[in-house]
Image 1 (tube, rainbow, N blue to C red):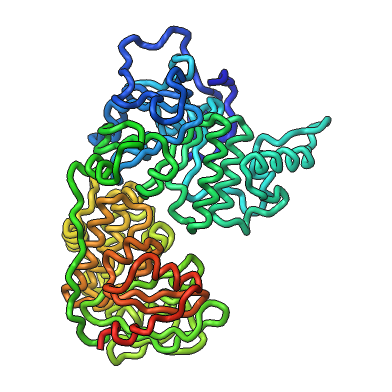
Image 2: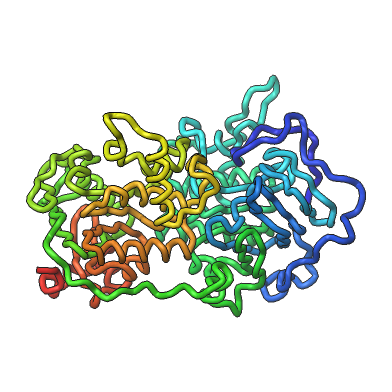
Length: 559
């Protein structure tokens, strides 16, 4: 680990700052002889790292509590250069707290960080973490949209000419060299506003390399990426490995952990329960370590569907989707599948009334919904859980209680006034039904993990007892146990007679819960598959334009 400057640098967007004027402080005395040894299986053997290699960075016996909640308890991890180290666990397992300790946002209450020489490293803020060679790449990067790629890479650290003027040519030249090193042809002069999430992440990685980061932490980097973008990101990660960078890869997608990581650490309830090479482990091993039990298969027997509840007829919107027609029956789960950009979410938003459309009709039973009027859909018994829970599903600064009751205020009001105790009882009841984990119902939604935020969105809509529920990417960014709970909930809703429309990019999820699968490509419905005939291969074949609608479609649809 290179020497750390005492001068505080500008915040790099990790999410918090230390006291001004202080950098990373390193005592001169040796590390405590009683520091916890690496966890079993945490050495470099069997991962492609030299057996006598020393970790670039070590976390030793780190604990962190927030009030009565013990977020981390005695966690020790070694990070080796040239190795991708996966970190997995349920929401609330301590992954985010570990990231914030590495990023200098929170110091550990006990325990310490050690550099490559075994000396304690104290991070007093985010700039100190950056100066120590640690970079955090978040799921949704925060670039300055009106600046160029090169300006974002060198923000607050621009190379200067004589007289203090910014050397734009030097920024462009250095940025281009960084992206060439990563194997990505990204134009340094391009304005950030038009970049995809994947391209924004590449910019953040380039920024990390520009200040010689030796540890790169990627927090759920693939959650919003297409398969092609994931493949490109994995190529960038491989490039980082080849240059001796230690990569921490946090993901809920176990298949990605097995594809890219050499070592994996599992956290559960703030404790380290497993840390060893990926080779020799199975997905079942990780799941058992994460949740302390086997996850039951939630496959369900197909219900006998009832009458059509939601009917979409010849819905079109110029340049977005065209001639979309389908029904969803009572007691049935229908999945809209397809590649990112196929128009699935846009159809769902139009059906609910969020977006207008040019032609066509949407019916609930015999009632024709007014286009562009969500309240009309709500009054007809339609609920919608949007794709982006933080931006569209929740008011993040409002309390858990207020978010749950938000769609039911009219029902809770007495003579036009809300009674606080009634609203609280209502919210507490629904939070309990969906097993939302929280410390206080009055805490803001920001205090919850991603999985519990999703449960709050579901509670808000299920409390209205809808006849139709549309759920867009219901398990994106949530852990495997909570994902199983959401699947179980959708199945129970269908068994209760609710018509369920699911939009999902995860094919295993589609196959696990859907009774029928509709496949979209480039704004059109191109295939309809019954559950019994569906497979990942058949869905992808239709989604990529390699096959037409199967002949058996008409027989597969409910009468």
